Length: 280
Length: 306
Image (cartoon, rainbow over all chains, first blue to last red; front, top):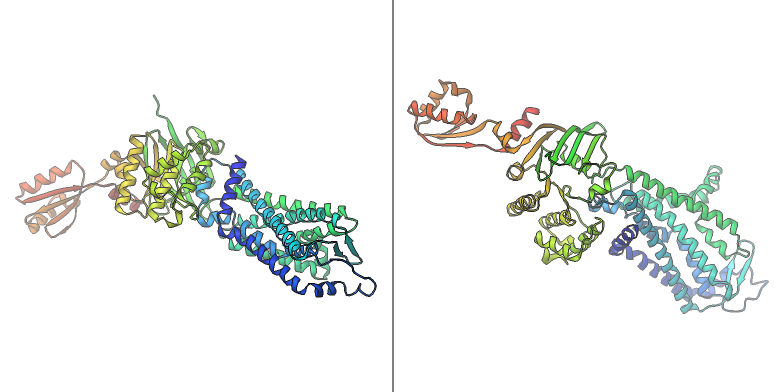
């Protein structure tokens, strides 16, 4: 039955126009950034490496599809969360808005199954969005800029990865991004269970993310103390896959924190929804 | 043989902050009943129905459906119930057929394409099965609501204000449908409505609810027979008639007059007695019309409670 419920939820998600906004927005975002870089690319690369050019000579195609795709992955900090919240925030609140809760909950399906199916459908949508980002970035990047070695800038070093050492890093980085964005999806889903209009959860999710980023960025004692507990502090964990050597302990810790948030938000949604009186 | 109880509600209450929407409600509905559930707005009808369908949780009390506790066997009992709760809403961006297909899959029964088309035909929407529900009128949505309630062929059908927003023809069709489902298909129907004449025609038993409490319960005939009947008497000489009435014991039963008509509130057996009195007093009676309706009874009962 769970499989049927997930299929139904995915069917409903992909029959809505708003679902495609995410895919269209990613396509536009990736295209605009890549076309922009193709015009200004050399200057950008020079700017990135300005401090190193006095001591090193760069030979080869460094401005390639891989570098551009890595830059675009930074979109998961703000752009992608909005696109995720757009659908996840509507999963439960949308039913309340349409008045279809009544029709669903009077069927012989437990609230646990209903909430779980919607939650998983939201996660699947999130994963598809990141996969689309990967496909768009890497394929268009390769077409426009070709391939080559990947140059990765770190705080105290510059690392150059050979062609054969790159693809798996992207695979893991996008996998990590799916987990990170699933936290956003879970948060929007939780907020969606509290209200009867999807605008509220979308705006609130974004407000929380922005507020957490601001808290993390401010050099204030109290904020520094809470920073390790904010899920936004771990969203950028994908960058570790482009370090040498890869710090798996940091990645594992980040995944654990993100995973706990996903389970926590889902559990809380379930708890609240099972007790909710359907009055719409 | 004892009749099978399809719905049994014991001491059901629901408290919303300061408001007690339902207060210690008890009722039983038997197999084959068309059970009228009446009450003015805010009486607690929809709250009771929502509790019966597990949309909201009771503060107190027990609901049994088909002899099983709703709390303990929710998913099993809901398989045998079809319902319309207030106005039926659907996924407007999907077709009528897709909406029913989704709801069919959620019903744990094998709802085939043939069955979906069957119920759509039953409610007269077979030609619009490919249309998106957002293009439907209110009446069409109401019909689709009925279709989804019947989709999995349940034994118990709960209808909460099923004719709201329908034109007279639509109301008549729903009424006929209820009678058909009860008589031909032997379905048990729990009908909540504020249109009392509608309940009067179709219901076999009913209760009247006010301020969350049951005021009265019984068969429609019993309840109608227990009330005063409004009788309109058309006389040839209104002044003379009024004078004779005011001098007699009928003065207390006389309510008002207009043109050549006098209005009385009488018991069934008093009607012929009044006619005899008027004739004996040489008041020409051209017409004597008793009007008896559930509406009058309903209003008198709920007025008393105010």
